Image (cartoon, rainbow, N blue to C red; front, side, top):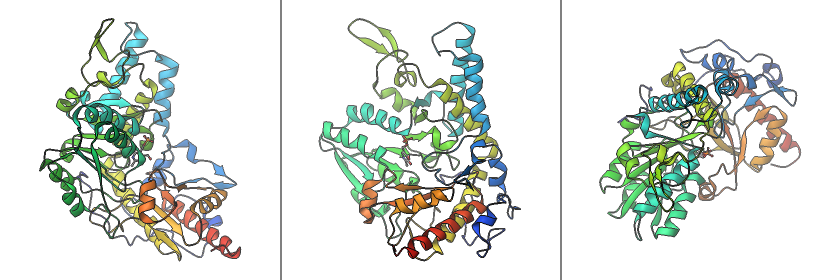
Length: 455
Ligand SMILES: Cc1ncc(COP(=O)(O)O)c(C=O)c1O
């Protein structure tokens, strides 16, 4: 089973950029961003960035190099305009009005659900539940299926590499139900250890909930092995697809899992919207979580009956403009083609990794790009002797936006024995030249601290 439809295997990763010239100063290189493509997809970044207005700006007198896409992505005009259009022309509540504006808003909101469903290969629109973000989607499963199905001694398998969003909800459920948490460790190449996963699985295992693509390590999960291990004992599988849905073609039915969760804002859509996909038969068994308008069938003074999914899980007025924005983002990404997106990101991710790896004193976390399933187009790293926040702060003075801290993976940082890391993460609009600008700024940062005797 292949989790990436039509994607080539991981690249050999000895990418030579069109303009790599270590002697040229990054300041001079900043003047020209676009470069001639040297493979079928290598010009994609320069083409896409024309659609993303925020990227055309200077920060601290330097062209913005936005490499914090794993935290949140920038938005194309198509998304901004779709939301603007809703507010200018048909702002109205959904599902509850017979007037023209409400009908139009309802149609657009439900069409957005259909776009998300098609984007991830769902069997039906009704399998998509809109949430505020991925965190809310995991909490939804934890507080409904988890609270309903787990009892003392039941086991939930997570990993040491999970985002806090896929740790804390299960801790809450375990505390309330008496279920036991187990954690898959890493291999020497810092991927999830599938042998260890198989050892952890027992007849008491009821759920395996793992990150598809790690937001810190860039490692890509062997979903097929996880599903096989879970099915051998009848356990359910939840996939945290926050860092895969924006970057590769996802087919939930081919993946064979029970639920996936993702956030719109990492996929060119606005904040305030995410989704849960679940197999419909399973969603139907899940009790409501939040009560309120829209999630009911009939309400009496002392009890209520509930709507079928997905409405059962969407209490109150939803994020209408945001859902419409997410639908527009799905259209936009589907228009590029997710195979193209993934192929481009493999190239630029490889290039990012190789250029960083070539620097003295830099440690990169996660598997190499030559790993069996490749790695995401991000690199978490540390520079010997320097704190990640100091590195990121100095990079910002050069217009380069990277993240520093624990990236909501504190247990993983503890597991790796580091307090923090810096992270550069690419998306479809980043160019190889921006990677060069980042590397040159990083070299200047390292030299600066070296001169101050801080290494
Ligand atoms: C792997 C992963 N899971 C979950 C989340 C949580 O996403 P959100 O904060 O949008 O709910 C993130 C966000 O960084 C993430 O990278």
